[in-house]
Length: 138
Image (tube, rainbow, N blue to C red; front, side, top):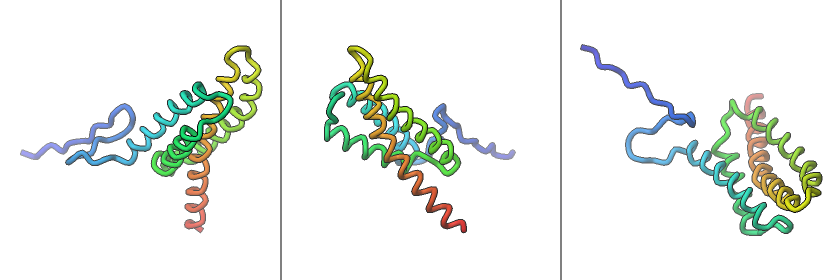
């Protein structure tokens, strides 16, 4: 009787659980960094909307670098860069407009500024990785 081969189960987040000993999967670490970065960006925008907090800014930049290094695959590069460049443009221009909204405008502008602080380092890392990959292929 032939043994049945186990097919890896893919979870909702697209990750395949690793066998054997609880090692950290770099993809899941990058996903967590993205989730924490998004949440911290919102919190930072609400906590200090007019002047960026140096500790939160440093944390957002660090998480953006981690996301750029660990979370974006080669297949996702083009879509990621297109999405983040669009997000940067809309956030930069939209922040000024949303900042004019009564009562909550400064908070909306602070949140968008914090999102930019998180996304720009990830975009730079992915763009540099893409340029390096293109240079290797020539």
